[in-house]
Image (cartoon, rainbow, N blue to C red; front, top):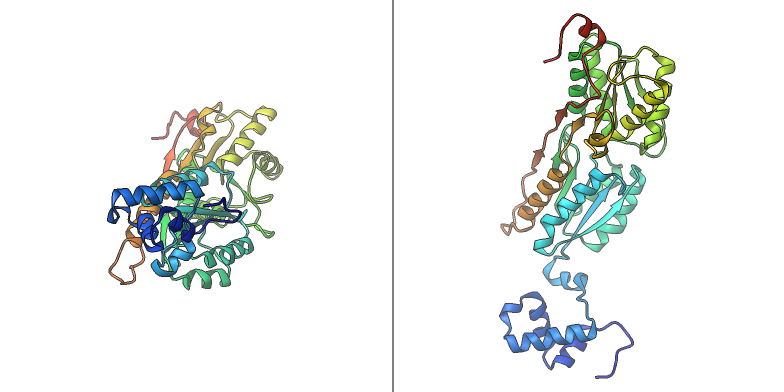
Length: 357
């Protein structure tokens, strides 16, 4: 057979192996149904020609593409990367591939990605958001495949959800700082203007502010500052802005460990002792928080558990042959307070000889 100057087809494989195209299809889809000798000839022809099966064309009959679309806010955040990695580990043994897009926290970009991905007929969609444009919501509702919203626990998910309550994370963070005896308490989060929005971070800030009010404390130092996504410099700049408003602030919650680290570095530049002069609490349990000095207290989330739970849920849904629509599932992976070295009882409580439990 002369060398091909075009993309090889299944018919080319069948001619080279001396079998029918149906036999080639069976070898690729269910090799145990074909004799070892025939299977070897077909696989040798596949390798010689460099043939790659057309999954989309094959899905016309099977209705499966073995592709799961995943839409994340960013690929630079290690927590989202860990979630994607864990999701891939669950899907790979079943021969599912992850098609990843990222939105940079823009709703219009999520909508654009859905318009690009859904025509490729993914078998499922995983999206790290529970806030969508009206059009995007309609596309997800009408996709005809399982949809899993992750990294949140929405009251009314599109279909299924795997995550936790960002609002309750904020409340728990405030309760912890209050329990340490702090009364002038603030929070550092991203701005709420512009095309990019971190709605999960905003929910954490809302929960934090609500807990302060419930305790009879002011929420005037819950500061929304800067752009999304937050960077280390966000912590430095937002903390500087906080000190202009409340130079005697006693404790801070940062919407991300990234911001918390920036604030910690600014404290060191200004000679503010953490936690003696200021308690600092982050979110996300990033690895650098365990390495910095002092080690960062944080609200911990198991990013890998989110990916694993979403993958296992999809495996159940995609291999359910009953034909019945699956009831929506909401899986809460929870969160936890991780106390390290940047939070401590207030100076007033220490002077009175009281310690936190």
